[in-house]
Amino acid sequence: MDCSQGIFRAPPAIMTDLYQLTMAQAYWKLHRADTEAVFHLFFRSAPFNGRYAIAAGLDHAIDFLRHFNFDQSDLDYLATLTGNDNNPLFHQDYLHYLSNLKFSCDLDAVPEGTVVFANEPLIRVRGPILQCQLLESMLLNLINFQTLIATKASRIAAAAAPDPVLEFGLRRAQGLDGALSASRAAYIGGCAATSNVLAGKIYDIPVKGTHAHSWIMSFDDESVAFEAYADAMPNNCVFLVDTYDTLTGVERAIDVGLRLRARGHEMVGIRLDSGDLAFLSIHARRLLDDAGFEKAAIVASNDLDEYLIRDLKQQGATIAVWGVGTKLATSHDQPALGGVYKLGALRQADGSWSPRVKLSENTVKTSIPGMLQVRRFEDTNDYVADMIFDELSGQNESRRIVDPNDPTRSKDIPANAAWHDLLVPVTRNGKFVYQNESLDVIRNRAQNELSQLHSGVRRLLNPHEYPVGLEPSLHTLRAQMIEKARQSSTKSRECEL
Image (cartoon, rainbow, N blue to C red):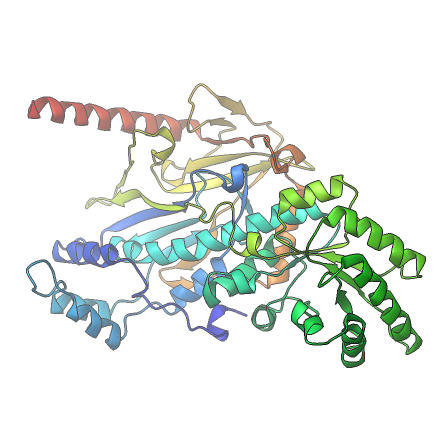
């Protein structure tokens, strides 16, 4: 189910940064609005000091594009904005132009759930430069956050494996939209369920939950509280045992569990939400097993992330289900992916393409010119390497890649390695050609993709670098453009002196 069927309608075209609209008016005034351009959305470095990311958010981006338009209320608002001379910022004829604007770009994207790496385009937009520019802010908003959360979830799920992870982030998430997007992306990344009931309804994600400390505190006695809950919800009994004394709480849960069993129901388990989770889970497991509740699960929460889960497992914790909230839904240790959207090429008046490059004092921020595609090579079991190449250069048969940040490093790809290109058509001339996928299909893709990555690339600390490089002719083009731009800049400074 797409986001238009949920609580929110698709974001309007006016959901953008002001400078996109001012640039668009400038293109329009200069009669350059229909100049054909190519833009790429990508990130420069993988999040969480890792080496990979899980692409997510495309479904919401598609929904945004399906509903892309400026309605009369948007135009009326824009007409009220003024420049520094207190005159209208936007010309009435430009606003009329926007009122009739229809999305007509070609968009290619990496399917959600695909493992992606730094510098690889997740989305490529080709079309009138004015439209390409107006799409930037919202595409980044939709892709950046969900890709970040899906990646975080994949790391947490890997640390917990084979145990399931439940996403509990609603109450700490960044607003309603952040909570829904986080639940969706966390499921893509590997979480088994969510506590967010609306996300369950909209996206068909399994929902899980039981009771809070307030339930226990609303009674004068913990045992009475457990018994009352068992009477009210006999088929959903995971008792939260740490309101007062944890191990005493476990013993009281066992007593109620025995009475529940006598009535034909089974206690699902207990939840630990504080204290030394390794120590408490080990002792709780013994108590449960000795009482005949070998199948009762121990669920743990309390500010968990991939590192704490890994450490608890190393300490012998007997936790079977992991509830992760704040540090997943808010991506606590890295709040933004840092994806960018850069111009790659412009169509000239004679029909030829002119590649464009952005320079930077920081090498990693120098962009890659052209109309880019990513080719993934694989052997029978694993991914081997990714090649970024320029579709404008014609048929690509190369099997060599050059590191985009260090031209002294290159790699030859085996001649027998199979390959497929990652970017697939989503729209052509504004018409949608992409078949939307269910969340389970996307989630399964993510698990498949991760299984084909070398374990060293997936490890939490000091991960191995997956080979991603430029096709040699693209590397040469980029180097020549950088040199030419630097020479031009040097001459300009000399003239100024």
